[in-house]
Image (cartoon, rainbow over all chains, first blue to last red):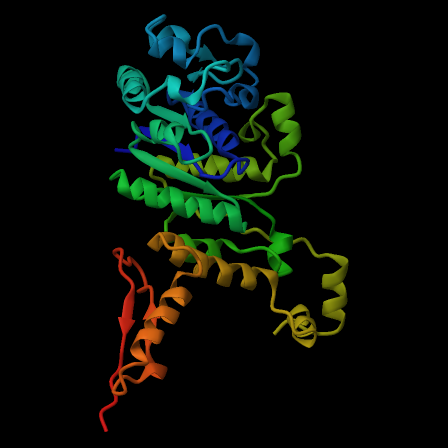
Length: 265
Length: 84
């Protein structure tokens, strides 16, 4: 049985947690699974923007926790993808408004009604992070191939261990094959060697990602998006399918042609 | 060895990713052990100072390190004795 409650976390901010959450949740819903994505970043709500649902929010997670409405009533139905729902974060409260046991209770109430429950964790390693991780069957750590992100990811992995969670799985996000080829950026193998986790996905840097987020349209819905394809593969792996990782080839540049001319490599 | 690597070697600079990897591996050993980055050096200095009082200790062979892998909250200190 696939893990049902999946927390997406990272330690460092800005590595692509919400983008990964929105896209993988969308990809699974497209396949017919019933999916809810919970934004656990109380006070800094963002998942609604990535999904383009910001204008449809009436109730949020804090209303649910405070007992104002039952969880089902706070769910926002996605406008594009059938079977996909968002449970938004509150924008005006702070992180302490939802305690770990509160989120565990909300997730328990939703568990039987969904095939997958995603929790988009806040950045950091304080209470908000601990709340987001508490109900999870599986923790997915998103890291960029960049020093600060990897160091923070390592902290998060250590904290998950001390919280007696199963070993997290890793998504390496925003990898730039050109920079890797130049020897400027850490490769996926380097990141894996340092963090030693099971790899769940390799997502290349996609210059169109900003536009997808600006339109509130997840990349998995764009057939020719390479990041979208990588994220659809993550969804398949969560379903237990063995999908090969994308070969990230560098298109031949002017420099490559010169190098060939000189017969090196 | 590729063209770029040769070029880099000529300028005496390893690729940035290799530098990053080495720095990270070192930082994380200290992070995982919950130690400040200069802890080993500071401890070594203090211990060597104390050990110099004992003529049978080979101070040049003293090795202080964080064990590989799960350090289990320990630092290992090896103190060889001279046996001539």
